[in-house]
Image 1 (cartoon, helix red, strand yellow):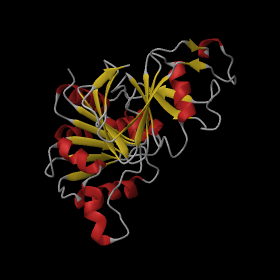
Image 2: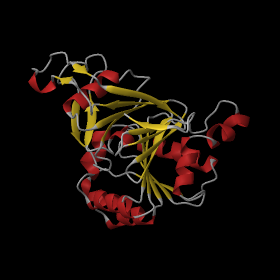
Image 3: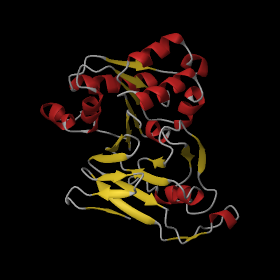
Image 4: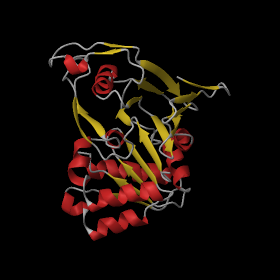
Length: 285
């Protein structure tokens, strides 16, 4: 059984920078980052922010340092890993060993896999997630890299045709899922549907902004935040012509099970079971 907790986030999570100063602490205290702190062990937990995906790592790192400071955290540090050599360094491995939580920022998910995948840092990250009460959070690119099959690009407008999206292998922390982010705001329904057509044994999770999932034991997925998570379950597809089509051809899928979940709802990966907050009754699709 996996002992750690994953928290993929759809991007643009509230960091407490409300225009009115008097609202700032309350605005963030009930949000996703507050949940990250709680799962990590509270305000004294050691949180390591990794901005490898970002094109402006120092600025992004500082924004998270400020946000966690607003939540009363006093043991937060920032790390940028720019190469596999840096990911293998003893200094950076020691930072990971000491952390209760690692949080990957947004940006370009390929930068995370290019610089970290297959390194000692990746090995230790995976080991701690599997064997310890360790939290691994990530927003936007930092969430998308958690899966094995990782979306790296693709136009939302063109993604209903075969070959419109690009995928690479991610960090393989939650291999049952394909994760997409900024899902509602950027209209990414088509590209996630193509991804599950290509890999019908997997489940697609589309995360809206300021919305996340707390994944316990590699199975229980609790929805948090202000938006929605769209679930694409291709487990009972009756027709999927992806394998027979030429690239550039529109896709056909029938009986793609779709769920719209929000704060307080839960999804169980192994059973493909949903528990909706408004009802004590659960069911299996």
